[in-house]
Each structure stands twice: as C-alpha cells, then as structure tokens.
Image (cartoon, rainbow, N blue to C red):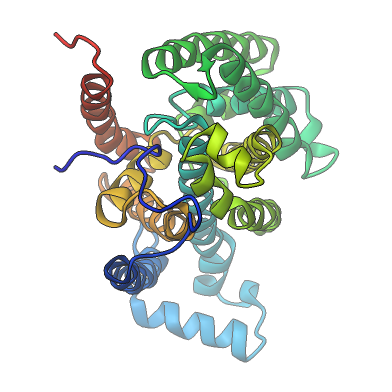
Length: 366
C-alpha cells in the first residue's frame, strides 16, 4: 500500500490552488465512472438481497407497479415488504454512507490530519449522547427532528472540545488528536450509559442495539429527514472544498490568498457535525467509513478536496451499502449490527495509518 499523502502536501501553486493536472483529471473521470457503476450495482443487489424471499424480477415489477402505475404498495404482500422495509433501508444506507465519508474527508482537511474521522476522535460518540437523550426522554414522539437536532448538538460539543485541546498552530498533532479522541469517547460512553440507566427497558434495548450501528429501523420518514439534512451539509461541503485546498498550504498562505481561516474552520466543523449527527441519529454509531473511503481515494487521486469531497460521497454510499448487504445475509434469518463489518476493515487500516503517520512526523514507533 502506498504512503498516504497528507492534507499538507503541496500539489498546486498558491496562485492556482485548485488547478487539476491533466493526468489527474483522467483518473478522476475514470474513478467517477467506476464509482457510479459500483453504486448502481450495489443498490440493485441490496434491493433484492436479504431475508425476505423476493427475486430480482419481482423487485423490478414492484417498482413498475408502484412508481409507474401508481399502485398502493400495501395491496400486495411483496410490494408491502419491499416498500415499507427493504427500499427505505437501501436508501438510508446510501445517504448515511455518503454523509459519513464526506464528514471524514472534510474533517481531515480541517484538522490537517489523515487520521481525523468522526468515530475515532469522538464526534460520533458525542452525537450518540445527544441522540440517546432524545430516545430515553421520548423527544422523538414530539417531532422527527428531535433525534438529528440533539445528535447535532452532541457532535458539535465533542468536535469543539477536540479542536480546543488538540490543535497547535492550526494543526492537530497525531498523538494529541488520538489521545483527545480516546478521552472524548470515554466521557461520551459514560454519558450514554448514564442516560440508558435512566431509561425504561424498551428504550434501553433500542439504544444498546442502535449503538452498534443498524439500519433495521429505517422508515421513509427517517429517509426524508436524513436526505434533507445530508443535502444541506453536502452542499455546504461542496462550496468550501476549494478553500480546504488553500488551507492545506498553511494558515499564512491561506490568509494571504483571502481565506478567512478561522471562519472556514468553524463552517467546516459545523457541516461535519451536521452530517455526522444525522447519520448517527438514524443509523447509530458506524465507525471508520470516514477513514476508509477518503484514504482509498487519496491514494488514487491525491489530496485535493475538489474531487475528494464528491467522490467520497459515492464511495461512502457504496461501502455502507455493501456492509449492509453483509449484515443481512451472512447469518441466515439474522440482522447483524452493520458496524461490525466497517470495523473489521477500518480497525486494521487505522493502525497502519497511525504507524505510518507517526513515523512520518519523526515519532518513535516500537
């Protein structure tokens, strides 16, 4: 595996920080086409794979009846199962995967650190505390927006805390970032456990399973809320992606290029919390998606956020959909927590990245 270019790698000149090299443009086009094909393929596979026995032909016929003929999905057993259970889950997997991957890509640019990822530095755990409060105290029965709102608040508190303790000269050192993330995760876990203790049996079971990452409770309402919030967050990330490339040149160069560095960081942190919060609210804590996808894309395309942000959305959608298929099919008649599969891949990758990054920064590695 080739070494990961850090977000501080100078790939463009300060005068033209977002200019794309012709050779890289060709790779971007090829990767985009491959990812689009992969997302379409995994979506089709996910639509019919699972415990419910429905053939590919029945899935296509159901889509035709409901979408093009206006049939009521509840009038048919197969349509009812697909449109109330399977299709919302497939759509939510795409949205949550895209949100988590884009969060990771932007966070790595903001912290100038390839190891920054929502679950590693405690952002997902902070969002989990907020969402747990909403579940335990019944706020979700008041409005569907209570879950993402409280998750956003929790994610924001965790992110601001990490940034305050880990930054030095506008950057977050590897060891400081990891240690701060460990502390935030520990405190957030304690907070979540405390609120679970306060809840009744039903809310406890819901939160405990949800903490491992699951799409089993997907509904069209949760899909709608996630789509609106994720679209807003993704649009914001697309608007600042060029400025993140300028920020990679260093704070002095970014400031001299007309970028308000502090404001950019605040906006980026807010967008990351928005995307992570809504993902955690409706899918639980799913780790390492924001690490795996941006890392893989940086190896192929380099560190420029101009292509990294939109392609991370496609890569995240593909990865989480693939993990969801595994969660539904590996063990017959069982729905495993989806976080298990992302952790299997992401855990070893994080250790490799940590070792290489610490060596690159001159730290002693045993």
